[in-house]
Image 1: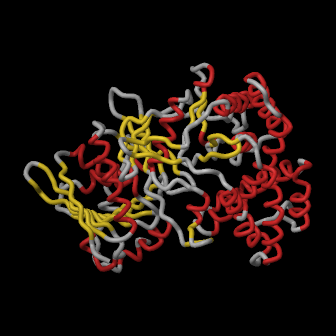
Image 2: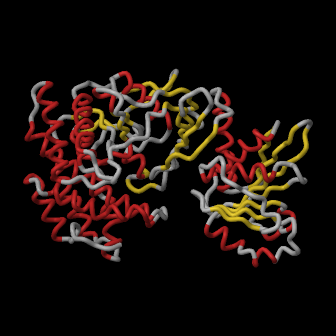
Image 3: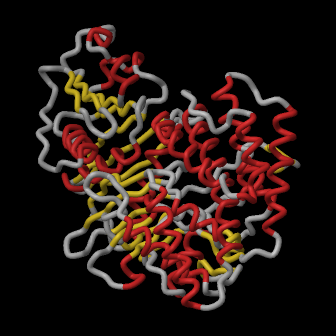
Length: 503
């Protein structure tokens, strides 16, 4: 693998600190940043800014570890700051616990030349060189850590092009995909959100020569978000205004809609907010949405259909991931065939049902409550890129059976009642048909989520999703209780798919 090189001119200490912030945003456990340069070159300034950005504490005391040799910080990514100036031999790194530190966090290493052969070849070297009245920072390396650092520097360039080059960056949130978000602040302006949405990396073919993302119609570029966001804004939905965009690189600078969510201080769902969200869905479902939406000059996004193939491959995540996890063995072909047969029979019932724009993940992590607003404007909606044209009941099921928070049967009924009342007030509405479609979509979604949460643990090393499984199983039991799903319910019960299991 070839060593790659990037250079940045640092005019002053503030520019050096911004580089530290940029590297902090890219840092992951296992990364090593080797900071090389003469005394006073800016190594400690960069390290201090990096640690403070990870801690989200601009006033954090970050002393130089010249005499202690290593200083550790329990930040978002644990970071260990090594100063090897007084190191006698490279082997002394063992006594400092270097290997353990990199296993548990990231490492910043000043004076790396004292132990260059000891550092991993995936280290990112940041070399400070005198250039005029400032410094030249030369970054070199290979592998994922360097690629993330390079992308973070490209995000700073994007901010510069938007007039926000001197903004402070702080980690905001990541999700189950490769997307991540930061809060950026600049004096004289409200905070904004910096969205990092790299192009989706398609996996191997899983069926008919197609990867999973193609079959499930997962958004593959940020253009989908931009197009759907613009269409929703035009339709009266409070989604983020896009202040700047780079569709090729996958960067957006967005309006920050707020930080108040749908839960109270105890982490419990607020029924009135869920009802308001249901009323917003009712308004959206009364509109006609275009299937072709514009993201930019000459750039269009065709909103995919939530077709049978997409519904089935999502539902089958339960068989692919959840069944092996609870049984300790791969699913039998008989189980797979029976599962598909039962689901195909259920999906046949969707023929002729109401289809519209469905946002797919219309639940509490993607909804902002804005108490100072009125009407539908009280709700801010984010994370819209995976929208499809599908059954209107799907988003209601996503909301009323929120995968991230326990919705009691009472709040679920309250949410459904609010939606049904709003649809009735707007015109003719078939409540029985809706409730059947709602049950089908709730069963499909929660089957999918069981599989996804196990996959996130087994494949992606994110075990914290497993804590949600008991809730998802309860939601499945509720959905399958509808008479139209009796056959599917019997199948789940016969194969132990609704039993409480430890993974």
